[in-house]
Length: 119
Image 1 (cartoon, rainbow, N blue to C red):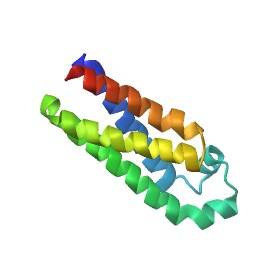
Image 2: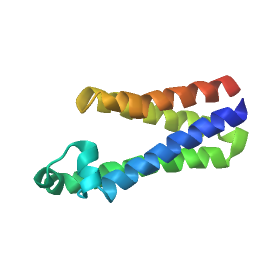
Image 3: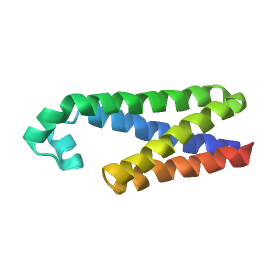
């Protein structure tokens, strides 16, 4: 079960690295604009905000990777960062788009449940 939990945590970390790339580097590109449904003007105007948000997603990924690197002794770190992922996902779903619940919060909940079952 520990391997399954770690794979789930790794997938959540990979998702957040993907979010970092989307928000920091692809926001103004056609792919990024399509992904978020942005006009060129809105993408230009909000690029610095998106980059900031991408950086936070990078910190979430870094925390999860840190927890993974510690093996079984990293459970508390994984739990903390997965909790942050879930809270951010719920907040994003409430304030921005419900889709964020499924893309961010639900994978975090699944990974958290697996980590907790492994303790």
